[in-house]
Image (cartoon, rainbow, N blue to C red; front, side, top):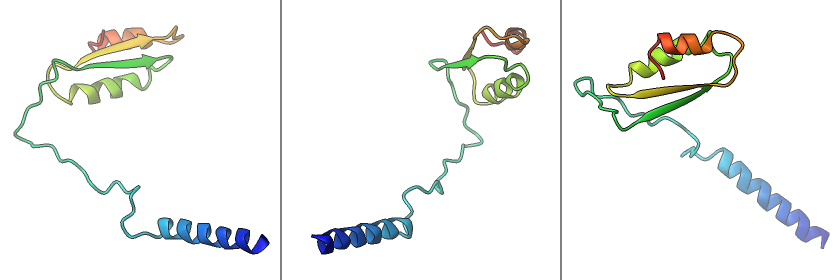
Amino acid sequence: MADAAFGLAVAAALIWWGIVLAPWRPWSTRERLEADPGATADYHDVIVLIPARDEAATLPRTLAALARQGAGLRVVVIDDQSSDATAEVARAAGAE
């Protein structure tokens, strides 16, 4: 019985090493979609919900990045009782 358990353990270890060392690397993110520089995106049907709590420092960068995504993107910032100026920053950037 101990030999069978040892054999299963060795087989399992070999399978895991095969997965780790596999040349096709299924976890790899080498594939990328490049944007067409001449195309314009229309996102009138897309709503972005951003839950935010005390995010006044990082929210302008996030909202600016979303604004560059395409025309018509609707951004809604959900202020979760922030103690900083999160709501004011969101309104100033044009978010709902």
